[in-house]
Length: 112
Image 1 (tube, rainbow, N blue to C red):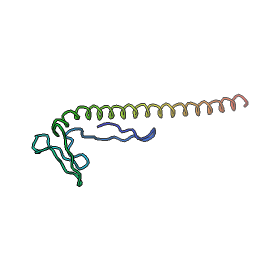
Image 2: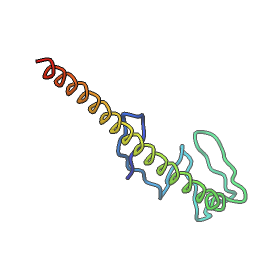
Image 3: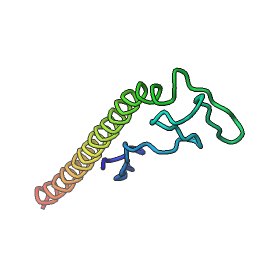
Image 4: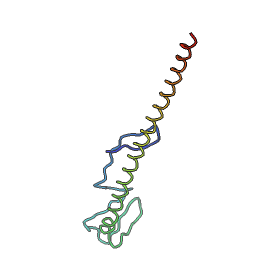
């Protein structure tokens, strides 16, 4: 669960499942080494994994997880900084409006 940064004004809470990965773009890889010859079919295309699909998956999985966690951390930090920036801008605008109102009231009382 993290805050997904969409824009400065728009952030949404998001839930992302990292593991198990499951099916990616129509390709199902067997980690058990069940695939004889390691050829998989997806939408009429054949894929050959060498040395085998299990080893490829086990070498890519840490990189995938590092990327996903890093992306989640970046989105969360960007959302936090964006929220702080918007809050400070609103506080500055409110303070400037209060200064204008008090200056106007002071000048009215002084001239009366």
